[in-house]
Image 1 (spheres, rainbow, N blue to C red):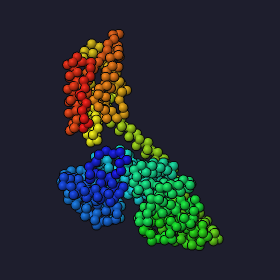
Image 2: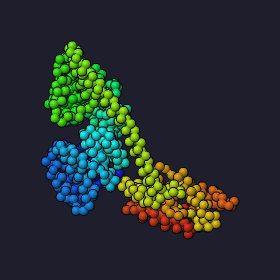
Image 3: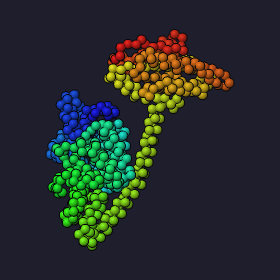
Image 4: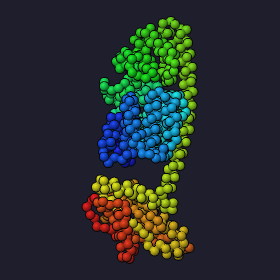
Length: 559
């Protein structure tokens, strides 16, 4: 991972799992480090072996993958069958089944694992949703695949790992493009490329740029497609890259759509069959080669090439899933070549077939747009409800400040970050003076208004990265990163001065309220509990000194 990625901390084995989508070699190296570390837990070792199996499967090393998978199972601690590491091993087993051609069995296993997504780490859940989406898309189960790719994107965003977000956007954007839902696909792929460029991962940049280039061509925006290809594809691809990373078809399509026939021909070469590509890619390559031949007047050769590909597709015992765009293109090229040779009956038949496929394609596109809108709306509602529930769980309902749970979670993170980077952190503990008397004399509603007033002044004085929490009753805690004790004390003094000036009204009687506060600065080896205990001690010093004041510890060296 590059330093530009903002992400939550992850264990070494989990980082290796994230790296799988970016760089298989780096993922394998991270796994070997986990296995070489004697302090690694049995669970981490099992996860590392599972990730190594996944890397091998992605590279086609089936026997090596099986050995790592067996070792991962051996290392799994006996216990609950739904433990996260055991489910990860099941996920990798599903990959093995798919690689062996048993897609139905792989889908069944992935569905069982995906059903437990809420009980799994977000990265694990993301990879399974993605893998299941790919598997069901191979079975032309488009609606379920679209739903799963959206779920995967939601999980990737929630994980905080931008490399997973890029991967998810690429999967969803390219699938929408396959469904010819180009209006939704292009924004997805543009965000994907922008995020990949931010991260600087070559492989992800190439895949994102390749899919966006092709999508722009399909939309009839050839100049934009060629600009993307020249800037983000051609300079990054090397002769040693595997065929899947070379993106020859996308580059050639952009060149051809801009009339650059000789450049396109140079990219494609002359081999249309024995190039190691998948059958779907092969159809697209045949179409592009035939277009080059037509541009050069080699009409008979173009017709023979297109018809031979049609015959190959028709003779397959298991029909290949060929993108609708390529099916239409193949029929249209055949018709164009046949018409140029005077074979008008063939040309008419091919154009009729092209229109038939195109009508189906347009219908799928319209259905995809409608379904995509429904899924996005549903996921946004779920995300909103989840955010509301989380806010309610971490927010004090009266003041709108963080509650004690949020203070414990985020406060511990702020302390850890301060110590890790050697930066100051100040903590203030505030307690309202004689607050019981306010409640007893003026009522709890008046007391609530005082608490809300303190909260408002705290929020007005804080920066985006600061944390203010109601710690229970009339006590508040403020954590100020990158702030020394004297700076924090000055801020709390300003809040106290504003509160002193305020008058509260209850039953036509006016009253004011103050607080006492203690401010402490982080020290080496501190925990949140220790830091707050020192601030609390200073608070009681302020109480003993007459209240309505702020006591701060003297500034010391940064931790």
